[in-house]
Amino acid sequence: MLIGLKQIVPIFLTAVVLIALGTGAPASSNDEVITVVDSAGREVVVPYPVKSVVVLWSNPAKEMRALGAVDRIVGMDQSTKDEVDKGTLPELTNVPVVGTQEEPNYEKIAELKPDVVICLSAGYPPEPDEVQKKLEPFGIKVVGLDFYRTEVWFDEISTLGRMLGKESEAEEYMSFFRSYYDLINQTVATIPDSDRKTVYFEGAKKYLTYGGAGYGSGIPNMIRAAGGKDLYPERSELAFEVDPEDVARRNPDVIFKGTTLGWNAESDEQFKSIRDEIMSRPELANTKAVKNGQVYVISFDVTGGAGKKFGPVFLAKVLYPEKFQDLDPIEFYREYLNRFQGLEYRGVYLYPTP
Image (cartoon, rainbow, N blue to C red; front, side, top):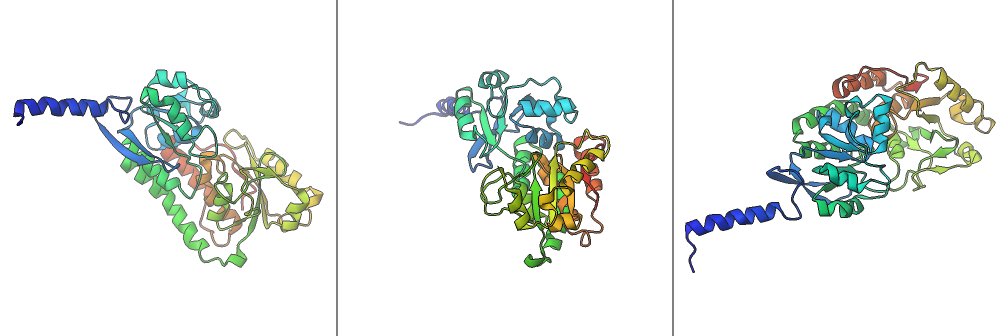
């Protein structure tokens, strides 16, 4: 039976409405949707542009600010609130807290009706599929983006820019980092493997370090991006304690000690005290790093979390100062804070300066 034009139009409109109300529907009234692939390899249909976001850790908050979209954050986890209290995310002072990254408060998230929740992609439960299962009844989409792994950071920023409708801002942001990364990559490519320096990176806890095999914490890949060799490439643990004698046997060329000091540090005296403690450890006295004075204290602001994207610049300068004479990590970080975070430079991030 033929259907007249007047019958076709209502049927077509009904189909559009049904599609919009289906499982792929965004929480907002956005007319358009796009499909993105997150860092867990999941295809997710999200509104375009995403207008409201709940972040389940601080990394995406800082990256959204860099793209000029921090005002779209309608809920945050406790780690992001810690950054607010620290003074690095003042725009979010009045944004509600929705639990922690490990234990999100799904009821509070649902009440906020965000288009998207951004969480970690893998290795830190709850993973995206679990979060999505909890929020599926509310039509809230979940995207897993990390922003701490140097090997996928550019892809993640591109994805974030697409979601937010901030493609040109994302390209400008990435271009700033590429100008430094390209220099590092080109220079490191000229260093023979036999000449690359081995690095022991110690966490805030004494003799705690990071595994380089598998997914990992991002620190070993940050070291490799700077042209170094991490001391435990065969270990797959996120973080683990090591035997001091084993560190000595492996004999690192350079030692980095991570510290939570940085943005709020008033002078380098505390950094110097931390370095002195490592230099005085008898079990490390005969390592090349200690004997040659190649022990550095570095802030997690530039080597941890979202700060890992700065790590290759800081580490490359320390590892190969003769090859990076014109590279200034502090000026690099200062420009980043000014241009992409709207913050004035302050604090201490590396001691001693190479």
